[in-house]
Amino acid sequence: MMNKADINERSVKAIKQLLLEIIEAPGKFNSEDFVTRLKSQGALAKMENLERGIVPCVLNTQKNVAERIFDDGFDTLNTLRNNALMALEGFEQANKRSNKTTKTGLQKRVKELENKIDLLEQQNFMLIDLVDMLKSSLEHNAKENGNETMRFNVEHELKSLRAKASFTQNKVLIQKVHDNA
Image (cartoon, rainbow, N blue to C red; front, side, top):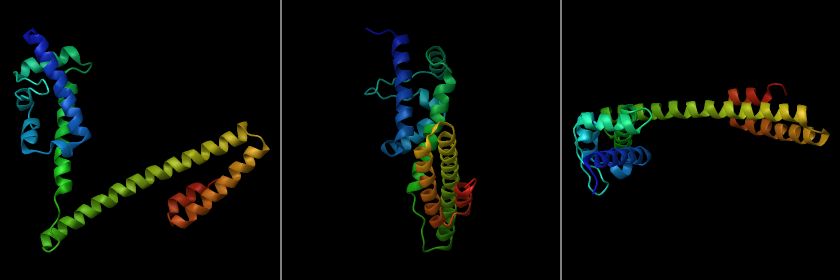
């Protein structure tokens, strides 16, 4: 039979696992009960899910157990709690459709699309940097370690890359792949 300390330790580990699952797939846990539980440390400590081995306890007990079993102590659990809450709220927001027939709905839709454009622009710049880094690495390796055939093949591939970049009409990408041409 397990003593209370072992039960609390198993419970805190189960809570950590649950929080990781919520962060990974918030759609599976999208319920008002989870959001309510994650809004405060105390509410999370009082959570009970016997199927998962989660038993309620007082917050100080949960903090003490977390301090003992996790490298970053209770910060680990609290950070996961906050991230899980953000994941659930983000999932909920993403699934709310804007009403395109009202002025307010259209304004909301415009804001959603502006946010999406901002995210896509950030991803685009990250990909451009990746292409630039790979291009530079390829050129460097061909010059330093390659034979004549390798240098010829690299130059051929870079010409192909420049041609494809030209079709994107992305001035930053075109400039990056044409630098040092």
